[in-house]
Image: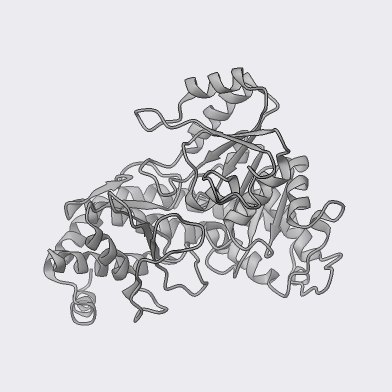
Length: 429
């Protein structure tokens, strides 16, 4: 770090010499990890470039349809581009998905019917899916449960891995299992994200027992972190958010579903209605942003990963428990830091907010956020509201008080926000 940069951090952001020493040590340790992910970034950039070229994308595809949106060539071509990138039959990429949870919900509702069973094999899914599934009594309005769809789950084993023995037992004993839910990312858990190689082995194991079951992967936070995606290794269906990795920090809203054509079509009927599916839906002039965001996404996703790796190492050097470790291989952009202290957790998130380009003057506080059972604190000073590909941190206010950092459009910004957060915590001690 240049002396002029150090002085700027000291004078403008009150970063002390102790934190700067930790910074230097962390940067030395993470060099080899950064090189590994730069190779992945380059490959995925070529993959996206080739998909855009093969579909002959031009500025004519930056459409601004209204009304029904019939014949929106930009919308329909983007579906084909995503299908190429994910190496699958079909995709549905729409600004009409309000978030990743909405896309996941459309995939589940579209492909499950009354008396079918959905089996979650990574334990309890991410909090915002609880109301979709109808996990808790008294919160079932409009849920899968209210429609007569059964939910079961297999918890992770003692090593924090997917329990193949328990899955085999469920599949052999229950003929109603229609869909397997696989959560690639950690969510609000304390485990490593599932590597693509693990997803491949899990799906192969499941298909050998029950070939016709739908293997669905929640792909949020995972796009472009590996050279392969779940659909490359046997997933029938995936879904995610455009304001996470694959939107490149430019897509203003939306989500996607990709996979086998028959399953994507069923999901499209849930997004709109049967008989219409993906053939309608005007795009309000956002198509250029969706294309451009996709083009930037391989680079931006790896910038976010570098921020997570740096965060892991510097927080570990500062004495905190982290997961994953800085030199663990990753499959998502999320970094978990365990504080075992409510105030330290809150101050960490406040530091990320203070380091944001937008709303840096705002003090984030825990609140009763829709879709969550616990109070949640969210640091999200972003150009796109709630975009977790931008530097952000959030946490449910519950023991052992774990913060989940994600995003960072540039590594330089991510590391600055992390330094501010660490300085705030060390001031508290």
